[in-house]
Image 1 (cartoon, rainbow, N blue to C red):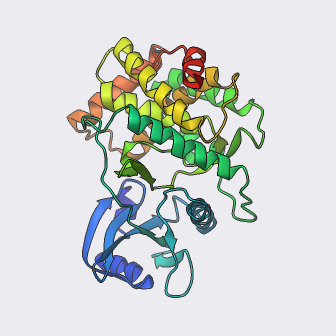
Image 2 (image 1 turned 90 degrees about the vertical axis):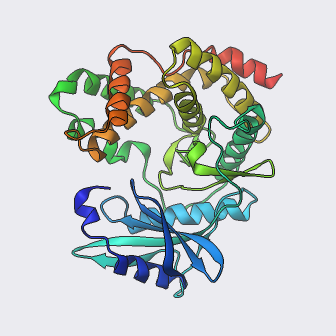
Length: 338
C-alpha cells in the first residue's frame, strides 16, 4: 500500500468499518494490504472477510459493480464468496478518511484451504476444476446485465499508463508495452468473447474444498476478453512453479496445465479456434502489467533481494522478447477437445 494511504488508516477506522456490518474487530487478522486492506473479522464465532478499498484505487460505483456481479455468479451456482449487506442494507459502505474515502464491504469466508504449487494437490485434477469454474463464470456472464453498474474496461486501468510509472530508462519496454496494448485494442469485441472477467484467478485467489474451487478476490475484475482469464492462471501457475527454470521447463509444465485447464473449461463454455493462438499477447500483457505495478507499489531505492531478483528477471525477459511459455496452442486445444 502507498505510504500516504497507510497514514490514513487506523485501528479506529477498522473498528468502524467492521461495525457497519455488525462485526467486531478485536480479533481482526490482517490478510493483505497490497491494493486493499483485507481482514478476517467475526460475528460471534463465524469468520468473514472485511475489505477496505481506498478511493484512489476504485470508485464506489466500481466496487458496487464488482459485488453485484459476484452475487449474480453466486446465485447461479458458482462457488464464489457472497458479498453481504451492511446493517443499513448496503453492499458498500463509505467511510471518510481525511478528504478521501474508504469503501468497505464484507464477504463470506470461503471454505477449504489454499493449494500451494508444491502441494501434491496442485495437479491435473485441480487444473481441470480451475478451467471448469472459469468456463462456468464466462458462460453465465454472457447473460449478465450490469445495468448502470459497469466495471471499467481493461484499457482504462491506470497501470497501463506505462509512462506514468516507468522512467525513460525503460523506453524500450514502454514502446513494446504500448504496441501490445494497441494490438489488443484492435481485436473485435463480441458478447461471446468479451465481458466482465475476474482477471486474477491464480492459486492465491481460491480455496480448494472437497474437490471444488471456491473463488474470491474479484477486485481486479474488469471488462475484457474472456481469453485473459485463461492466460492469467497459465501465467501464474508457470511463474510460481518454474519461475527460475528455463523456457523449456516452463513450457513443458505450461502445456500440461493448459491442456487440463481447457478440458475443464470446455465442459462449461466454448473456445473459438482462432482465439487460442492469441494467448501469447495476453500473457505478454501480464508481463507488462506486473512490471508497471511493481514500479508503482515498490520503493525502488529499497528493494528486498527477492523483489530485485523478480524485477530484474522480468525486465530481462521483456528486453529479450522471451515469453513466459512457448506452446503450440492450437495443438493443445485439439488435445483438450479429445
